[in-house]
Length: 529
Image (cartoon, rainbow, N blue to C red):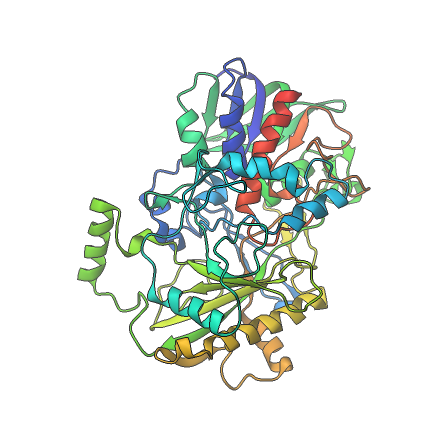
């Protein structure tokens, strides 16, 4: 393997795959893409309905949070992808951009070039949208955006109930407004997962100017003064060093990126010294500003067999054969087929609540998927723009030691107020006539849980992460900014960050679509120099 490249990209996740593909469209540019995990050719990755079988496997870093003070000191399972495609190869495939005001807010925070009108062309460039076209959507990009081809009956019941409650149907939750209920777009193509690995990286892997190394754990950045010159990494226990003649691009995500910076001596000086890391560049914002969507799952039993529970071995085999031979049947859905964006008060600029309909009785805070134990359904929900802020910090000077992830869930009381409202809204929807013929007993929080105080207790007992960490190397112009609006790391040369960590404030939706957009824009910035 050559040891000198124009660009070195660390992390072949949702962003890294995009940037590697876009840069190598120029035959004069050489790129090294490093990924700690392996290939994404496991059939479970490509089968939409099997996302639940991917957490706590070799495809997942298997992180857990620090004990959460507001959640009875529980340590929450925190899946992160460790495979080509990153978390985009193990996620739920929901494609939601957020609200246009999210990006205008970024611009108001000093992120010039990141307003809604600035980023819309990059959303469009990335999309092969099979639901909508027109001025807001792209139709010939790499990422397939589809609705599920075979939906659960419970999805239609939920949407009918929402409308009976007065929640309007929104045919385009990626439009100028995401208020209301509707079908969730998904990154599914021909009834298979279509993440960044499939959409961007695989078509580019035959290019002679792209080198992809899997099983490569990056152990540090190589600096010469204030310039990042390259990276050190391990492959099967063997040490390597690669040099970048132009730039190194960090795409390791909201957990991996700040961890690698801190290991390399870039971050809050006091924190680095405390674990024996020499300070190369004091950058106080590295690892701060962690935001995540913490959710609560309200659950009901069903009086009719409308969920996947109870399938016999013969039926399961037949369903698998149906998928294997014709890419049809129940395995074609990612289950998260519909939801709703609501406002808790009339004065909020964009919806501050998201509800997600899950047409089966979902397990609670388990590190791995557990099959349902009864016919039922789940309505999950979270505050769309959590106010709680946490940290990602190194635990030692050893680059192979795991970081300390502390989201500090519910450290801001407003997040708990919204979560109580979420439980109430879910109950109101399920009480509508559309559910009368199928509604069974409420299991969580349970009919005996009525007061706000009791609802709060239930929330503390079982709330968990939605796997949406962002913000730990935020973009901006203030003293806590880690990158500037061109994604260059403040105070250093030759280093940019392009992943969920640069988002100054989380979007009113899910992070995968914005991360792909960030990567598309980053590719242009990198080629411009």
